[in-house]
Amino acid sequence: METKRKAGWIALGWILSLGSSHVHAQGTATETIDSELNVEPFFLVTTSQEGGEVNLGPILPGEGSFQAEVKVDVLTNTGRPYQVVQKMTGPPVNERGLEFPSSRLQLAVSDGIRGGQSQVKGFQPLAPGITVLFSSTPKGAADQFTITYRSSTEGITPTGSYRTSVGIEGEM
Image: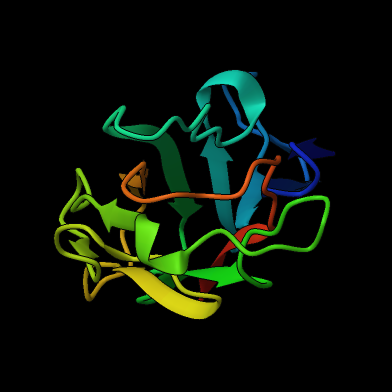
């Protein structure tokens, strides 16, 4: 019998074999049941944020900054160290193809609640490409941390809805 949860996160397999029955002189019977438990390795990174997407606006000159948080959960049983990276396809652009000034987008990453370490201490510029956000403990413990994105309203920004694609991935 095999039980699967969440598209293969955890696969548990039981193998049972019945040995032969033995009857003792007093009339009692003994059966031997051999069992084996097979726990499949898994490594899963999930994200959650309020509202389903990171929204850093509306941006109005002189209104300060906006922040959005993304909670990251890493579920694993491999015992191997890992990193969590961010892959940003390019700078945010509006419907006219104008870029949002990259100097006004920043991110910070918290340390993990189970000992993993942030690789982005304090707010730093958000840059296209690959950014290492987080490193696990040496034993690769499951962990949870938060990414905080921030936009600044300093200066003049052309109007529009700015979008980009950002992926959060785990690497062993």
